[in-house]
Length: 349
Image (tube, rainbow, N blue to C red):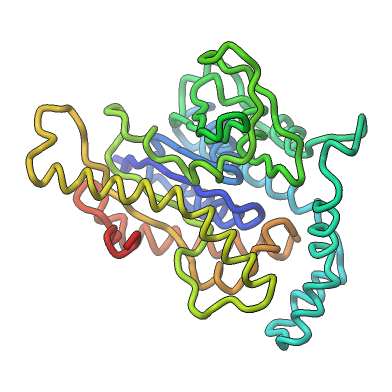
């Protein structure tokens, strides 16, 4: 019998290809059954690709369909970046610090940052398009209503008007919902989606601002207690950021990890109440937390590479993800159903 788990997939732009590798390895064998997936931004894109594929069945056919969807998504994303000069410079690691600063200033990413400070996505008029829409709709096995098989899927976006998190689930998980979850407001126009709770059309931005990823949807009784978090943004980074790029990179990492750390703190609080017997009779289960990550790789990369999805970077991320998933299956997977695999107080303390 396969081991049932939930996945919580963090967002992080092109670095989300790390989760592509993790998922590719987990879907390769029959050791793991994905019961629930909560994803944000790139995590939502990965989750939608997997859920749509597994809707074809829980057996080998569904797994092959899910892997085909993931391959399609990331190969299409890889076509966004085809600047050979930038790839050549990036391959010359380690770059001397002085040269690195020069590369940062003249790179397309530096130009893009300056451009987005002056122009908004709304300045493009009728020529605007969100490329994620076509990628999602053209998956070999697309999302569809009334999905019965496969994992429960939860997608996180941020309501622009209220600043609150919205979790899309079931038939609400449309291509528009996935686009909303990955809508960086400096690059894309807010995605408009009807909200049945308010009876109005609401605008949404990237879910990373409010939940990266949101884990509380995975607490429902029908899902297993085990949540495996696939992290993209490193929790810790040694040294003090000093250059403008290093400072901005660390600000980005801290802000996009803050909601995850809040949820982990709440989970630890729930565990303490449970140990004290203060949750007895309330029908609440205690989540068991595991993690798949490669902080050494992520800390070696700057945040700017998140929006520079070169094929070489994506291939490197995928292989690292597969290796991390292999290590999880050989090690921490033995803890599933029994105990946490991470020291929660140390993680958020």
